[in-house]
Length: 65
Image (tube, rainbow, N blue to C red; front, side, top):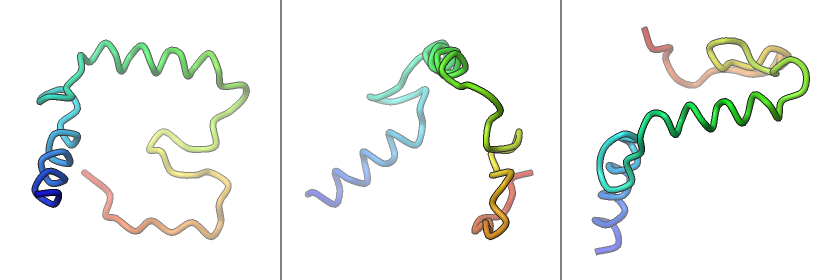
């Protein structure tokens, strides 16, 4: 029962704008705007979300196209 519940929860969380835990896309925009105010200086990642200054970083997943 716990395993089945976990699978259902993962499936629901995998679709952020749908399902029981679904939210409106404007909520995501609000959070991003709040984060922009809190960040001082340059972000440590590039536009794809990969770290800029981590020479030993190796991606483990294939890039989405």
